[in-house]
Image (cartoon, rainbow over all chains, first blue to last red; front, side):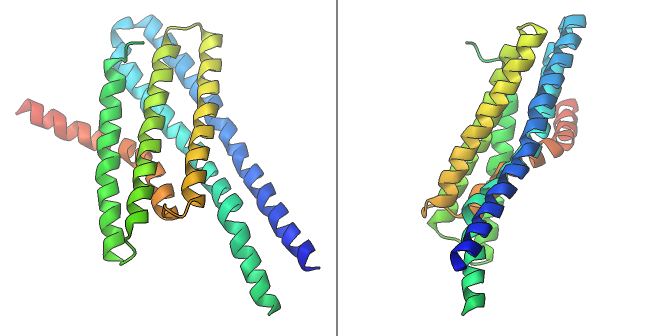
Length: 94
Length: 132
């Protein structure tokens, strides 16, 4: 029974981490669109290349943070949460 | 490949901001009495990951600008995925290895966002300085 409970905890943590990483898809699409639009802008006004690149870099970095939040949640769920939850379970049994 | 001036300038700005915020974080750890060498090592690892990620993103954007639209989108998507995997490996090492403090590994990853948030204020201050 205890093995089953630990297995459920590990499985749920892995599922949660996988679900969290769905958020990693968004920044990739967003950055791709941002760069495409920025290139159109540079094509129209080549003299504004520096300004557009700076704004685009900042925009890409902001978009990427969303993926990083998800990554941190996934890492916590994979590496730290199972140990904590199993400890709580074992203490509850005692 | 020649590195664009804008990419270098922005990376230096981000590195400076992340470094300053890392020092503040170290002081916070000292104040709350949780400081030891693992905090410093974790912060170093995370600093390299955060700044390296931004620099690689800058290089990707720089190279993508000269490509065609379809190719450019796929380049950025692939780069984003690879960088995410790279950060995952670095943070996984930081979280599992006993030489790094978990909080000091994870927190500096978000300093880039704060650096971008304070960018308009920094620009205002530097433009005022150059006007005088």
